[in-house]
Image 1 (cartoon, helix red, strand yellow):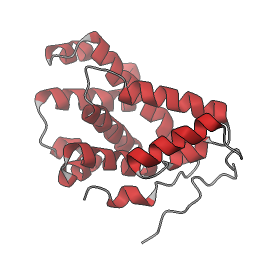
Image 2 (tube, rainbow, N blue to C red):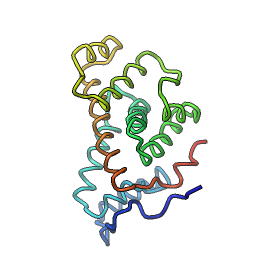
Image 3 (cartoon, one colour):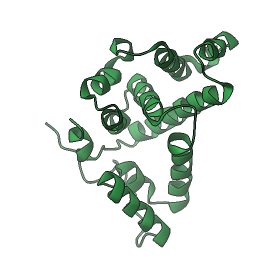
Length: 191
């Protein structure tokens, strides 16, 4: 079995040294909450402006108040990453789904094929929409948004589903293109 390396990507982009105080504080918050600094943050730390832009978008999409639960947003991240075969994000966000759902079988099945998971109609519709945004966003029509409304999603929720899917489509491509490596801890957490 190949072990994750300590180098976050295949690129030679060392972290700014020393890190700004605000970045050090952010990394310490990650260590306190997660036990690690995610490699995606280390990867971005060669350019603090890029890191700050990434973390601002991530924090807004994944942690800010929303009609979507934290678990639902992580489920979208896993499904989009599965479609895109993004190693880093499947492993990292799969770990988040395991933690939030307390269900390793659900998380692993979600990463392979969400249609094999026990989902309610709301979750199934949300994930089908995220999959369509990932595979064929140009084919999204009003009937797709209406179907989500029929499942109880408001227009702000539809925005959030779309934004989370779009964000992970971008990050999946960046992670894959740079051979970003998941932190080893993700593989073993909450199993």
